[in-house]
Image 1 (cartoon, one colour):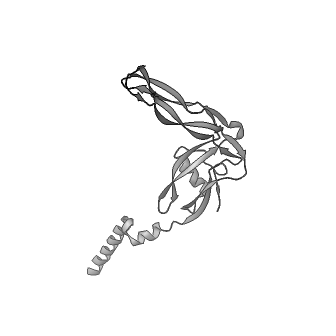
Image 2 (cartoon, rainbow, N blue to C red):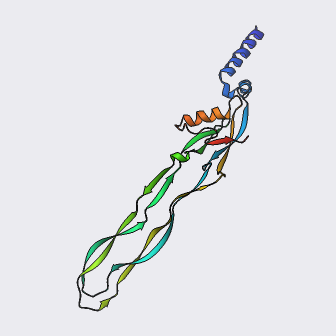
Image 3 (cartoon, rainbow, N blue to C red):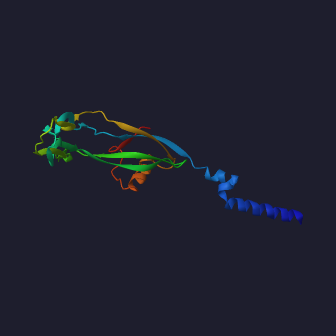
Length: 216
């Protein structure tokens, strides 16, 4: 009778172990049967045909009058003066991009940020005119002159951004990339795996050949 009781206790214990897989060695052997594969992927950071050089500016420093010379006792009024801070320029839009949080290691559930670019065809490039920027500053003007000693003028330093060259496209066959290593379940392709990751975050254009290439 004692042997039968002991047998049922062992069976009950084993069944309880199976119901509690995270702490059960027998269950760990089952859950760890999942195998993984390693893939290296290059995500494109630049257009395949062109290098985009943004507009270039030169910073110019100037001295401007804040208060004119006057005699002590003078009275002033404050006036506003607007000056050109940054010249108008042309901006070229040749891509759109977004950043996704992607599981790069499915076994360890490691998440990383990956930027994905959708590069336009040349016919769809957009030329955007960016208007000039102005800054308003205060300047004091003499209303009535004083009778005392002469006081020298006061000046301030300002900076302007003067356009040197507008944005331009330089033909090239070299591309900048960011390389990412993935560890995914062995029964999935890297393309299908990434499609799910990006589409779930609303980035459907992150597809092979257009946005990335599988190295190995």
